[in-house]
Length: 139
Ligand code: CMP
Image (cartoon, rainbow, N blue to C red; front, side):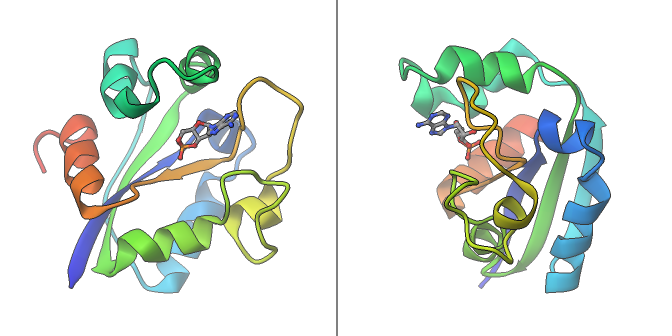
């Protein structure tokens, strides 16, 4: 079925000038860009977005990293785009992400407290609805 997914180009991706390349891969795959907005996150938005990670050792560094610069918040749409984007993004750890994926081609481990892995993508229909509601309450 046709799904929507929330994608974030994280601050490392925006800082490195990879926003266009990442959007290009999404569009080349055939997904539609429904909303695209460059913005700076807030602790409130991140607390909601990352609620499931609260208490994990990387939570503090993760929030700090996500506040370190603007993110590109994107809603994509297409048949099975939730799984499809996660497949485009590759594994969470960019060292292990397969070549051909966004993280595998463009990311690496920088030896920091949190994996700076360029992108986020919703992991289920339930999280997509929740995350789109957080980042784009109007959609
Ligand atoms: P994301 O898909 O945005 O969800 C949580 C983020 O935390 C993840 O991408 C990584 O940026 C980061 N992360 C997940 N697991 C770890 C880990 N074990 N160590 C450091 N950072 C992590």
